[in-house]
Every structure is written in C-alpha cells, then in structure tokens.
Length: 341
Image 1 (cartoon, helix red, strand yellow):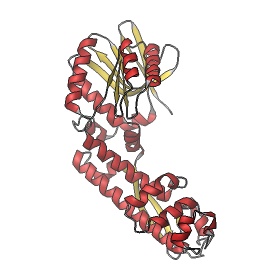
Image 2 (cartoon, rainbow, N blue to C red):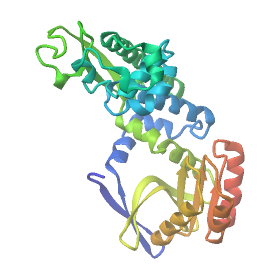
Image 3 (cartoon, rainbow, N blue to C red):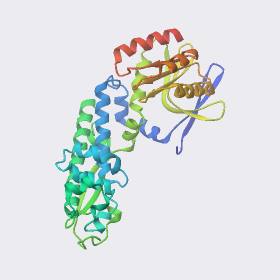
Image 4 (cartoon, rainbow, N blue to C red):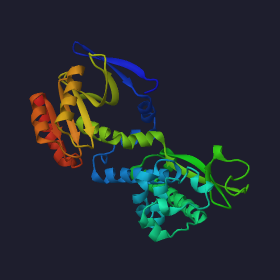
C-alpha cells in the first residue's frame, strides 16, 4: 500500500484505528475530485457510461502501445477504431507482437502457424511494414479519441479549469520514419535496429493519470455517490470514504464508506459493480464482526442473490440494488436507516 497516514476516532467506548492508502491520499488532493464528490450526477447511468467510455478509450490506447495488453483488447478495439481491416488487427493480436519487437525483427513471418481464417484473409505473404504503418495510425486515432472523450468529460462535469490536464498524463513514443517501428524513449538507439535508419518521429500521447484510473477502476465514483446519498439522510452524523480500518483481530479491512449515525452507531458500507452472493455476504459479516460495527449496507449494480439478502437481514446487513435509479434508491435507503435508528 505504500506509506500511510494513521489516525483513530472514539465512538462510544470503542476506539477505531484507520489508515489512508497512498493512492487514495493522492486522489483526495486533486481539485477535480472535490468537485465530482459533490455532484448529483455520480449515481446516474449517464455518468457511469461516461467514465466507462474514458476507461475503454484508455484501455484501447494501452492495447496498442503496451506489451501483453493486446490479446484481451484487440478484437473489440478493431471495431471501436472503426477499422476497415479487422482481420489485420486480429492477426496482429494472434501474434502478440505489437510492441514486443518481433515484427521489427522479422520482415516476414510465416502465417502457417496461425488460424486458417487469417491465412485466407491475408494470404501467405504479409507486409509487416504496412502493418506497422497501420499501427501508427491506429495509435494516433485512439489517442485522439481519448483526448476528445477527456475534453468532453471535463466540460460536462466541470472537473477543472485545467481541462484534460486534470485527468490525463502526457507520454511520448517514437516512430521510425522509414519502417514505422514504434519505440519508447529508453529503447531508441542511434539507428533503428530493423532498418538502420536514424530518422525518428515523436509521437505525443496522453493516458489517464493514476488517480483517475483509481477513481474509475476501484469504483471510487460509486463510493462518493453513495456517501453523498447517505449524507442527506436524517440519521447521518459523519462518514469517510476509502479508508483501511484495523479490526480487533489485528487484520486490516478496506471499507468503501465508514458511516457514523447521530445515535452513535457504526455502519460499514460496501459498494460494488459485481453480483453479490451468499459467500460475499458472509465475508461482509466477517468484516462487520471484526470491526465491531452495528450494521452493514451493501450497494450492488449487478444484483444480489435472494438467499444473501435473507441471510444479511438476520445480522442487520441491508442490501440495495438498482443503485443508479436515484429516486427509488433514496426512498429505500431512508426507510432502512429509520429502522436502524
């Protein structure tokens, strides 16, 4: 987790020790989070779709420039980039050689080892210089789409006066002007190893900055949306998002939202995009017991198993679905918290 800041709070006769993960500490210092955390848009399908588009754009660009990413992302990326030659992209994906350098090392690779589908589409001879040229254009297009998406996101949600710079970080790759081989700065020699040319073209790119990636991939946006909802309930006193809490067993538990009511009760809030089954509910119960919490609230975007709901209610663990339908969710949460007191 890296270096963390430790603190504690007293609730009744109990002392609760907590720490802030380093990445979360960096995140809460960003100006754009302060604006987004107060936005009513967080728990909406539109906002969820917008951040998924950002995540997809970032993933597509990474698939083109980072080794090991292409196998998972390439088939969908070929469609997303509106490529006229899907077979070409799928063939490159099957070789797993986008940035690994194998294409640069071999002017031709015998396609007999690949699926007959690619052989029929591309023939037995493959122009790898054309492939590298296509790759270069695909990278430029993917980068342009990510920049456009980031710009629209920033304007739509008033993220920052800095615009894209608030959520993106610049990177630079280099392409050989003769054979179109793509390299990072630390991989460039005086001459291109593939064609011996010494002419390189810079390729400026932008990727989602680490805090923004964490905001999306770790469902921080969901935590803040739920937290904002809870802050408006009658029994709310205080809460904090994304801290690590020390249980009585000595084990640390990362809790999405730690809630304190006006009556002094402690609640743990779990926010997930995944389906919640009975096993997950039992894990939540274990956290609750170890942290001496009075109740648990579970918010799921993908549904909750009926047996898990039944099990949870026996131990003051309350589940909520359809969490991107804010109006109905507010009423349901308020009714539940009235029971908790």
